[in-house]
Image (cartoon, rainbow, N blue to C red):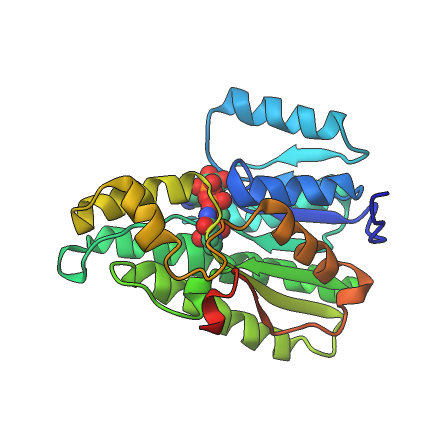
Length: 265
Ligand code: NAD
């Protein structure tokens, strides 16, 4: 029997939810009866088909807003859209992210700027817009999808690691700032999940290191993950549902690892 987390009828915005982890987290919320605003890039026909499919197989109303996470005005409108559509906002999942892998001396400045904007600054802009709504409701849940790379580093990922450490720091600051408001803010720090973002890294790492792709998976990607297994979407969804339920009320300002032991080493 599925667990009831008591969040049916709540409203969530999940950034970067047209694929991968964000799409899976949005589905997990919708399956609990949470009305969800999807966001992210992709083929408009596929985005619309996925939106309809999720709405049809859950008891939730599913909407889509195409805000670009590099554009503060569009981000503000995404949060406002939740209130326009549903009159409230209970859950904000900051998940949108991109990766670029290169040695520092070759790292394109425009890639640095893009990663900082999409991963770190967007989290500031969404949170800034969402907090007044959540404070007025006396309850809210902000969950930032950071990374094991928000806690430890790897070579060739300077922008990603810097941005994710920033997200973890921001999570702590907002957690303590809002500690008496009923609004919590936490970060989930996954190890490797086999999404398109990771598939692309396998190729990039092979080029950077000059080794074949199968060796990258074994010796590079999962080298740091003691359980030698990709993290599955359900493992992240379970933690998200705990955090956004009433059971998660005392967890705030935390960076929670779901990484097969990676950051324990
Ligand atoms: P993904 O590429 O499948 O999904 C990324 C999502 O972000 C997509 O919906 C994409 O359209 C969206 N996006 C990208 N740029 C955007 C922009 N400018 N504006 C709006 N949306 C934008 O990747 P994923 O692996 O599912 O990654 C999701 C999050 O999880 C990222 O923050 C990533 O850093 C983090 N993460 C991933 C892994 C992993 O192993 N895959 C591990 C730890 C953390």
